[in-house]
Length: 438
Image 1 (cartoon, one colour):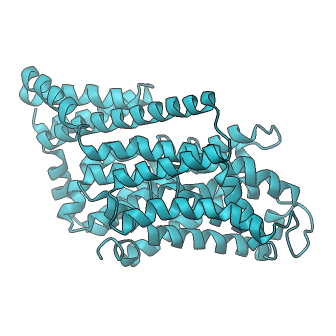
Image 2 (image 1 turned 90 degrees about the vertical axis):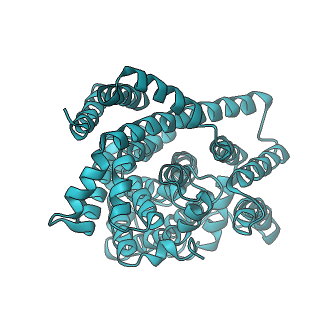
Image 3 (image 1 turned 180 degrees about the horizontal axis):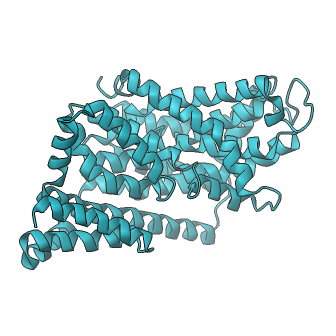
């Protein structure tokens, strides 16, 4: 049996193990060991397993994962998400469907200091959905806006998915972060336009009853608005200013951001010793799960490279009638389809070892390719039956009158906006690459 045939069997075996319910990281380790053993023998497989365990996670860069996770959890606990929403709610109170637009822009700012989509979905499900329902918005629209805009958390830097991609593609984390700014702003604007068009063309999908021309709610004084906005601006300045100003590397930016978020939480007295301990435990659990997946994916990637499967796939696709952009369309469609079944990080770690060599052989800019990958993966957060953001919102609301069907229905316009965003980035690559290549 040739190496390529063994590689194909390994991929098929991994899919079978996932469908049987085996954890994805464990499945990748099993098929990787079996694949290397079949190609080179048991002794080489054991040595490679040891070398992967020793080499895969010892880089200084990996310290960025727990730091950004901790920062995101501390920001959530400190109430910064509610303050962000309050600021935009007041600024857009005279805009029709202004609460929906406020949710999008608040999520965009919140994304710049968290980097985790699920955190955004959980926070704004509790803050924005009840407020929109009180103002007469439909259940589907209110939850759909939160689910749709939550995906900005993985696109606007800092982003956990960008870190994972940068490691797999051996690209700079800082450049990957920079590449997410343009597409993140574009997607936020597309979401806002989508909301405005829905409110204008199909008001029945947005409002359950006639709503006055402006949103009502508490009016904050200038000092109150400043007290809400200043902590947000400080965190954005510390993390993004330090990173893009060249004063901090990504790991140092994560550490400074986590410290800043801790100071804000302590100053607001939102942390108790017990809640802080629970945050640390949750940070550890998320970090270990991510790093274990990266370790398993490293072994999987080395096994595939040894088999010669990625090179064979590249030659078959790029020399045939499909061509580079045919491969790109198939790849993005596959990513979106996998998003219906598997979580975001797992999709990237399974697909990238095969796709990256093909993309490189096709002459694609790997920074641009990474942005397209992240956007496509994030669509999977909104699509049934998996739809992680949808399930997060359902759990956070704990409202029996809001069903999963309501939320999935509400996400459809935002899925369409994300597909438009993908098309624009494909047509105009500089949207993603301009800042990253400066």
